[in-house]
Image (cartoon, rainbow, N blue to C red; front, side, top):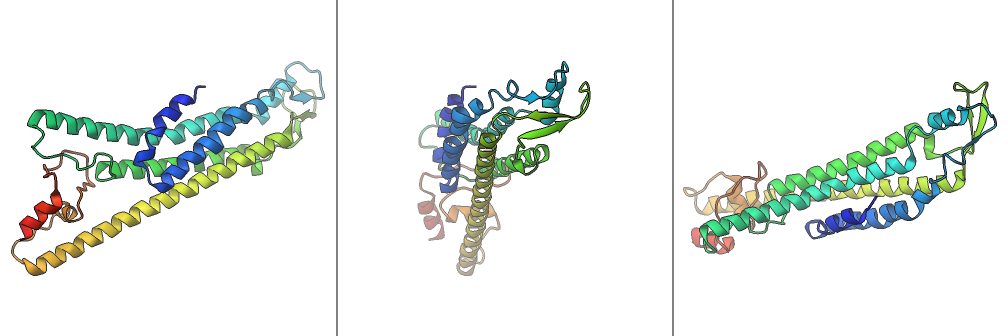
Length: 273
């Protein structure tokens, strides 16, 4: 599998991520993708060939291998990495969609007609929800795969010898796993990095939600101060409150917002004065 394609696409997500998101991307590529490509695939390349059972019954070794290894570690990790990195691509696509909309608007109405988005890459409105949902999805995928690994291999440990009594084995046979210690080391390493990624996603999610709550409280405070000075000229729209913070925030959808001047702070000051 050519992971360089994913690397090139996800590099664009760096500039739209927080500090926690950049750490998460670095951790995924350095400690998960590179380890997977350089070592994990080679360690598990001979797992079926070197899976030996103390019987010469035809088909017994294959049946026992399938019973103990219903899904290969390598394929599970590949699927996990694909599902974990896809939400970051959705964030990049959402930003690209905003930039296209902004470009079409300027071409249709001219350069001095105002802007749809003050900063298409800033996490506001629909992009904020896309980013938050991507964090929840990534953490959920890692948690789900950790549960699957624990269900298939208790405590994430591979024993050196397994007992098998599946048909067509004549009786209970002993089967020996190739390089169990080395495989256990890499399995625990991948589990630990997945747990750290889950922690980073949760910390980033808490950071974004708390920051958004702080912005809403600041906007309400600004509205209250404005109401005290202009009791007959206020509006209750939360969207206008966000203009006081210098940016446009729409949490409901990513539909076209009202056109804004190039410098909204000056516009607000002139309106207040």
